[in-house]
Amino acid sequence: MAELVRQQNLDADVGYHGFGFQESDDGDLPVPFPDDFAQGVFLNAFPGRLDICSGGHTHTAAVTVEVWDGEPPVQDSSRWDEQAEADFESTTGEVAVWSMGLGRADDVITLADSGGSWRVRVSCAGRREAAALSEQEGTGEGMEKYLVQFWPATA
Image (cartoon, rainbow, N blue to C red; front, side, top):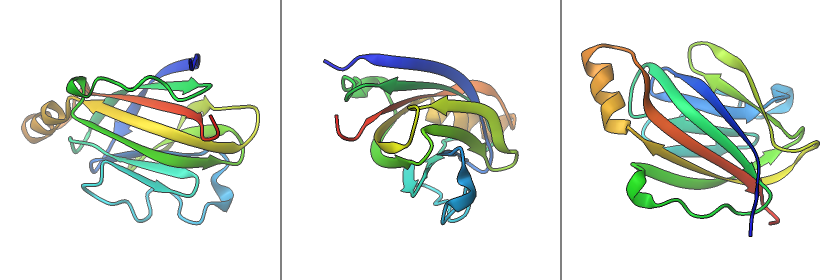
């Protein structure tokens, strides 16, 4: 059975409905964030990059990132508005959070001591609430919640 290696809670600044996770050493990425961001695609993978399309336009999302040593238990889909999985390739083993307006955040997620191939599952709740808040008040904090789970692709 897979075990949780580490867990990290952070805030993601959402702008223009999006934020992303990108290889920490992003100098060699063929398509850096936010180039080619696809509105309406919940989880979109590029080499060294994962784009997430939010329900709200501008707000701060609450994000929990988990790193597992194998595939984590599947989440109860009734708890989440959206769920998706993708492949992620890391050359350094470190991932940074990126926002549309502010660029790279200070938060760094350590996947491993070196690069490797990963699977990632992203689950989100509060999409409708974030959308309604964006339409009414403009911004908010923590209405939309994400669980982002990484595990080795070979597991």
